Image (cartoon, rainbow over all chains, first blue to last red; front, side, top):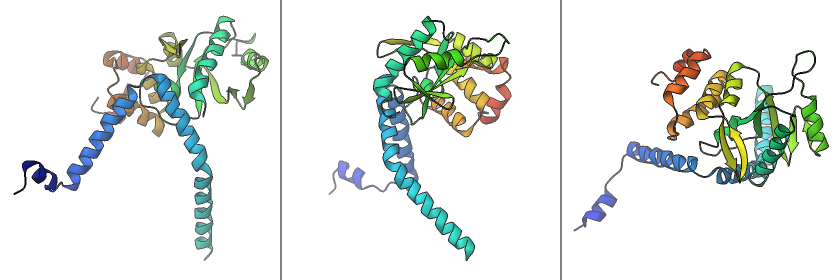
Length: 76
Length: 175
């Protein structure tokens, strides 16, 4: 027989409940982030800027390709 | 903005020097960086400093002393913004009564032991309502969703006084 713990783990969770749980966790996480000291927040801003620099060439390349494809479609 | 964590203190101490030497009047940090003193961190391109510029003989605001001072301290201009310690800093003149009030009522704070003035949440929200871009409404939502202590009565007073209440209510009818 399943123990109570196992039956809880195996109980089906609806997609709606799961989404709600994810949103709730995200909300709680954002509140925690808002309460960080300002200097720590600025460290995160710097890291986001660095990430942006890493991804910018990739994003630009994707946009360029998308534009080319759209132009080709328009020509045909 | 990569080095903002280390550089913001240095930038703020230069701005404090500018105020002490009379290059600018009273100032307050606003925009995204101002908001980040209260809400979660997010990506931004520049630091917005709202300040009183000196007036020229014709009564118009004169940004020349600010630019001259920054150049003397070794900083370059990029368009209308100053590139200070690799961070773009926008010195925005107090152009409306709302901004003037926001500077006047700014809160004293510290960044890594450097004293600074930050626009209060109520005025940051009101200024976002005044701008009314999609990103501004999103920022206001962050203030409401992240349990930031906002003085609701004061916020309403500011919005009503500056004719922004209807615009705000149209976006947040349940407020």
